[in-house]
Image (cartoon, rainbow, N blue to C red; front, side):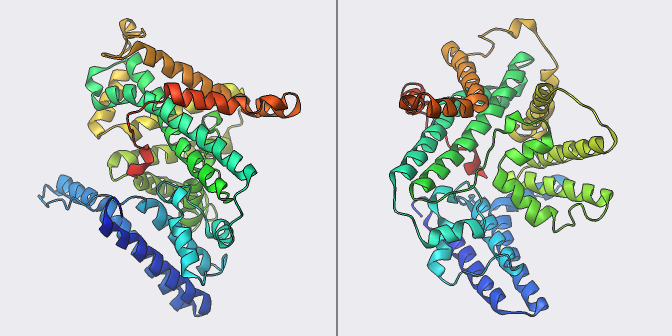
Length: 425
């Protein structure tokens, strides 16, 4: 409301509709009436999402295909609408399927929808996990405060030290792709892979940490996705709450893998296409979703007919490259930019292979970017071993890790007020 007072109506509508429909569903046994009520809930939430997020996209697509001149509406995307509509829809669907009992107290359900740490960009929580915790908050304890603060610090480190530093070089290339080629493009793609990971997982860490201070345990949203040995595994580790949402509420209702191989493949592609569209009102996001759907389909096909034993590290590197190719579709501003980036990527000029390969770049910042990516990779691989070592042998050193993070944020954090990437979705 501080940003846009009138947009509070949308979250009030979504909350009120789903609260009342769920209460009705819990009291009714007539299958037809219950199904109609569920359709009203889904339709109302999707109408809000369609109107405010996709209406202009639909208009521009119609204008492009049919050469019409329909004026765009120009609605501003409301904060968090992609997340809270999905969260309330999943609640109603779970009540319909009798997986969860309808909440009687409107204030409890409103808190479930509006719980501030994860309202804007997730994690997308399920009712059966979050609502019981919101019914009775724990007293704030030192243990929860310590664990929550650790996650907040780590999230801030990933955001302001790594993601915002990489954003400068990524924006140079992706906003003017015709001016860069070869190693410049390759490095920008890799930088974006780490930028979006550190940006979004950093937000998730902060959200989970803030909730933990209040004694609320949110769902892990990222689990070292770039250590995956396949794209299928990548999607089990990346934006976990959204991936499982699409699995449970789109892929399985479409039939999942129970209606034969061909049908399951179609369901898979539809789910990934919808997932791509969820991320943004642009054909580039749909292409990105379909790209991942095709890769997962090919992996399934390969595992069905081919049995190849390959070194895990090789598969991790190969998977990272495949995911990085997909990030081009995600980050590019248009289809023309996608073509330009890939064509320029294939042009390798040895003269561009230097630490001054980016025009107007700051050499120390460029080198620091590589250094912090290296630290991140080491942390992802070895942190559990270090924590175990500190607990067993060096208990007095357990706070050094947090002190180092704090100093990195203090002295190397980028202060440019760069927004979190997923706020735009």
